[in-house]
Length: 347
Image 1 (spheres, rainbow, N blue to C red):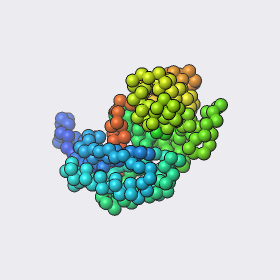
Image 2: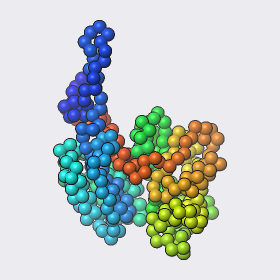
Image 3: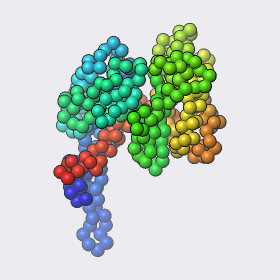
């Protein structure tokens, strides 16, 4: 234990927080996690965008930028752009010397052993791409990968002060995904596919999904599906759907509410099986009031009564900071993990 504490202090991950009053002998020194003395480069990679930021291990943002991505760009080019942009952010923030890790969230399943993603069907060119290499080569620090919905669930878990409770995060943007946090750790499943609720089938639906099957939730309730449904009214992007719903346009509110009911139907099963304390909704569509209200009512009507007893369903309070908070907490957990501390101490 002493060796581990010494290793953490040498690495700057622990700092002195004062002394405990003496009970007769020498006063005990109090130590605390130094979550402001190190920096992480975090990036949230989506289907048409990327958000990059330099943060400390508490989630404080020092520099941030948004990138629009083209579906025609190959992964190698996009990764090169992310590395170059991240390097510029580190220089601009003056935090390059404090960098301890890179955190990257991506859609789809993540193979953590190989460092690749089994990307969603809309990002097929990303499947099997090795994600760690470009960042590790450029920055010489550990590179952590996480599914975007898991990062969302972790963000609210960290923001709540790491409660002793199970958390389910549901992200509805261009696509649909969910993450589960149990005992402070993301539950990824045997093959990394835990939380893939977007491709559960809805009874009675025959709409073709991007994955090739018919009747998936995503074919009816994702941001892409809503754009298709509202295209006759002039919608061209998820941004149009979000803006119209916020403005109260009837056709958008009705479509978003219907999406909330569909996702709520699937989520009711998840709630009954997992029995979480909290469900937090994120993504451009997932935080819209008509979506949240329709989803909540559907879950409350369909989940097992005992699973509803303490259930708290709400939109995330973190806004567009959620992914950054989740990834910064993920880096903090990794830097303080027993395996990392043993490596620092040479154990």
